[in-house]
Image (cartoon, rainbow over all chains, first blue to last red; front, side, top):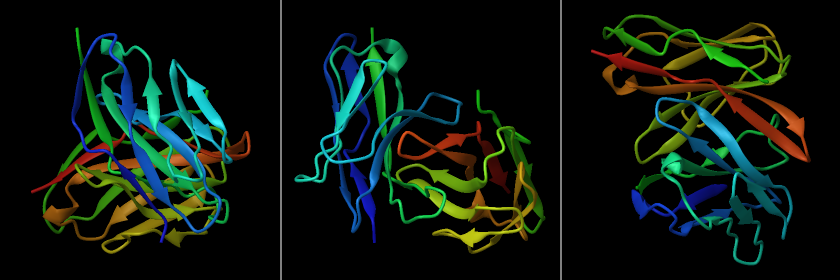
Length: 114
Length: 114
């Protein structure tokens, strides 16, 4: 079945460092890909998405490109801030799944130090 | 703004009790979901509903049931709570936007079964 694999955390960076969180997927169809973020004590928020190959999703300085040839959707940010400390989830949704059922990776915790 | 609310942020129940977790969304979304979140496992889908009185099993439905009598409300029921159901429970609703379904999450209910 479909699945998502993320790099393990926690990831600890200094402020203004470059961030990459790797995400790869396995899917039989043509999924949409998402990054969700969970700040401490809160639910998940949609950070960005891409719905077809070579699309780039971007939001709040984060970006990720849908790479069909490598089945990847890596999250990047050029300069992280302390306020980016959170858990990041990569997810996919196959259009055949009614209502957009999501399959999540295990999450990657990011800690940014001043 | 889409708002998904959950009835409790924290809940402590005893083994064998019947537990109700309530979720309400205010945006007339047809699709609603219940996930549980455990460290290292990401989010796993318990049940989802794509219409009133309709429900579909997710990946881990054992020990749970759901009810959707009104479009805005989706309840998760633990018929006889057990300690292995101690977890964070997240509710979500979804709508079609920008070429895919997007899910909106509530803040979560942290359930402890003793």
